[in-house]
Amino acid sequence: MKLVIIGCILSILMLTACVPVQESPPEPLPSEITEKPIIVEQLKLDPAIAELVEKSKTADNYRYFYKKTTSIASSGYLVFYYKGKIKKEYSTPVRVSKMLSYDTVYLDPIEKTAFAVCESLSVACEGLRLKIYPIAYSTEDLPYLPHLLSQGIPADAVIRGDELIEQRKTMIVAYGTTTINLDKFSGLTMKYVVEGSGEEHSFTQLGLNSVKTEDVEVPKGYAVGEK
Image 1 (cartoon, helix red, strand yellow):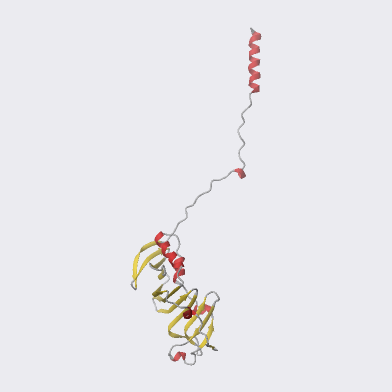
Image 2 (image 1 turned 90 degrees about the horizontal axis):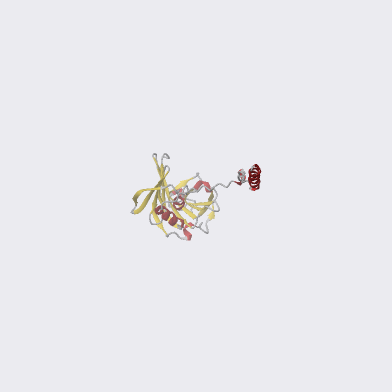
């Protein structure tokens, strides 16, 4: 009987030894751990704002009167924009020195050139008519262009309502400390204000698709004047 029991025990031990041991898988190395990408939802422009911004991108022919207003004074000039080239017209000649005054400036933002002429009947233009003067581009560079201001609106901008400016419907858009009025027809900026700057910039008397090539080209046949 004892032999039978011992035989059974040995059989059990032999069977247990033959069963493979289940080992736990090794811990993955840090380099083998793949993290799930974090998806951050990007802000998008309000559809109504985006529509006007898209319109502004196609604007390459327009004119307007630019005015900068502060608590002390205001100043401005007429601007003609045509496919990247610009002409500025002052209502009264700008006196640079005893020898030079001008009332019109032709700007090429790509070439960074500026040419001035004085053509009004003012006494300030006597002896200067039919002459053209190269001047420093930075002197007459525009601080803002209406179509570029519109395109700079960030995704967190919000609509603050509507406003009528010179019989044109505009949308009031705000972001940060900035408020900008967009013409609802063209998307062009008609008013631009940064809180705390003490300045207001307006773009009025807006005219679309009325500028011609010759309006922004440097006059031909003019003699180069000496400053």
